[in-house]
Length: 117
Image (cartoon, rainbow, N blue to C red; front, top):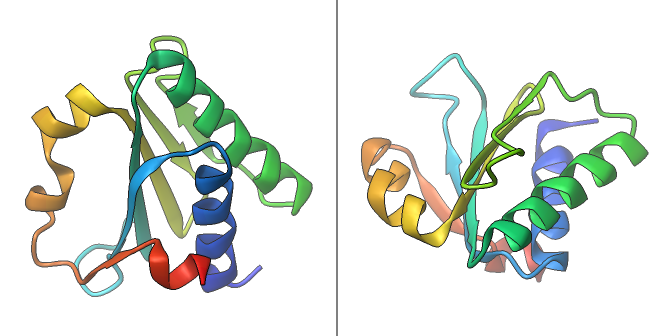
């Protein structure tokens, strides 16, 4: 699966569970970690868990290997490593606190609206 297709899959899966403020950061010019970060949040631990599980489920259906998934037990900040796409699903309070968008402020940013059209 191409990176852009994987990015679209993760954004759509997050959107299906009503993730809020879904953004993507293009990381390929800034880091060797991944080509894209997807950042979103839910308003409760239950919603964060549902978003993360939907992404995991859709990735598995598409035959995408999940390299690592952390934080699901607490469901405050779940990291899903899909190789070239890394997804950060936050609880709203934790997203406001950590502000990954500002940490990686040099990365080109786009909203989910472009993917979901």
